[in-house]
Image (spheres, rainbow, N blue to C red):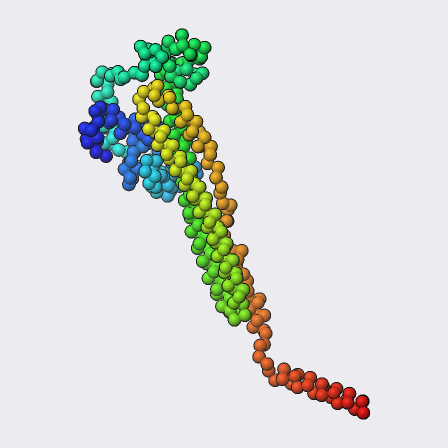
Length: 353
């Protein structure tokens, strides 16, 4: 990222630099940042461990050594998938450059005086700052509104304490939603793999049926075609079901991603009053979205097509035992039947005489 050009364009370079040093998971300044190769995005090591553990629940350490390798890790910033070695997250490189920048930033922040920004004023009492939060009405307000105004009978709390509480709650919701998105992406990947396995199994079954029906092709050609059509219909139905599920999960993922983007943008709002005006509804939306991922799934073995496999060996043996040619014995049998009919006719004529 070009920090220099970004700082030149922004009127407050220190605030802009601070935004670049925020972890996308915990929304705090990086702690022991690591590099997610090859996308080069940064995360706190603890946040990376939490996401890695959520995506790989069976990954464990035994006796100080990792018991599973080849685990997958998906970068929360760009969704790039990384195959981890046997060290897991601890095999990722620390970003020493970012750590040095954070140290310099903290030293600069300690040396410069605090600046007071523009504080929102109450609309009802123009000379009063908005400094408290009405817990009953769930809106920021001023002290005069509590003493003499519409919030006189309401329960209130200091604005800063509510601001920090809801900001922490929103950060936790974002982490929960990001983990949910990873699970949805995993399901989509599994469904896509299942589609491929279904196609391969269908192809194998068709080839096996073709080999078996080649022996009986002259007699069972119609049956063969009918069964192949049934396999194709079954394949199309299963693929349609897979594709419908994938579409539903992608829609869910798209909605969740947009909600995450909105929430992250809301966290960048420095003003408590402006933030609290929409934070509660945003938190409700995230919690509701997190509960809404109850879409359909496929049963184990759904992609299996083995029930179309036929054992035609006994039919082939039966066909081999059938003699389709008219031999000498059959011709003698026909001549004997004709002779018996002639003798019977002659006997009837003599009886009439």
